[in-house]
Length: 302
Ligand SMILES: Nc1nc2c(ncn2[C@@H]2O[C@H](COP(=O)(O)OP(=O)(O)OP(=O)(O)O)[C@@H](O)[C@H]2O)c(=O)[nH]1
Image 1 (cartoon, protein in one colour):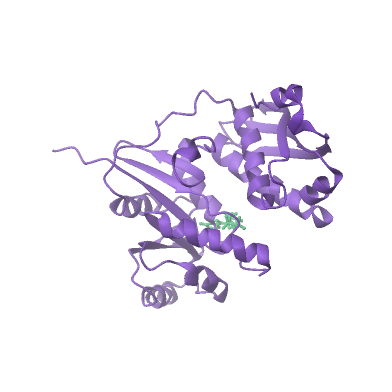
Image 2: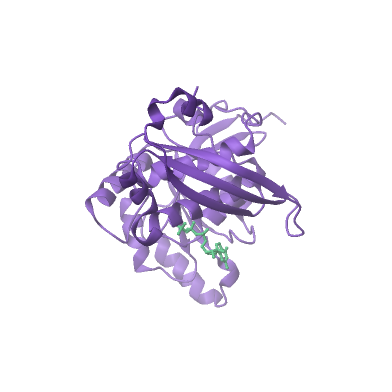
């Protein structure tokens, strides 16, 4: 049998909050996920995860801060960024909940570009009881646009996620891999953990905090865990800012920003490291850090 041509391409996973995007991403990329913010400079977009197997490299790109709930100026601008990213990927996977179309899916649906193939992943099928109703949901979605495929999945149980990868592969261009499969193994988990927190700070607050933050991992402990062979990690990080005003921005109203940074960074760490993570983040003001060579070294910027 002749060997299949290698395929490499970019994939964006979109969907309204809580439909299971992170869970799906974790299932798809498994242990091979790589957050490679430095590497990301070699492609046009930031990378959320990477899966390389014998014939395909899936590059899952980040769609920063897609917001449907609030429509302030910043969010509108961020949504334009999302649209830009979506128009440039090879494949889009739109995730919805399988039991019924939901009007909250509409803003995401409306953002889908015409020129990029879109796969509809109907997630959480493990909770489907009424098969006839589900068939109706499928037909309703099928009529809405020319989907590349409709794939019922359970991100949580891992049902049909292989089928989804198969459908994605079909739509990727023939090309050699961009990343080595194990390119990041020389990066310590500690380093990656700091990058993940920093990435979230930039992703959520980048416009307000240009380059004035640094992240230091104060402690990083891995304990054995009966629930997971990869262990349980306790990570304590500090976000350094150089002004009190910036500290307030990072923390946000009633701590909302910091909470979101923590939750998203923790999800990303769990995807990357494989086991559960307990993440604690503090914000400290350290004036002028960006000008101090000693501090820069301490923060890992040579
Ligand atoms: N029953 C069931 N629950 C699922 C499945 N996939 C995800 N969930 C649950 O749905 C909830 C949301 O999952 P997430 O992966 O955090 O969803 P998300 O779309 O990334 O959410 P945001 O980060 O808010 O955008 C979690 O409680 C998951 O456990 C599934 O296949 N079946």
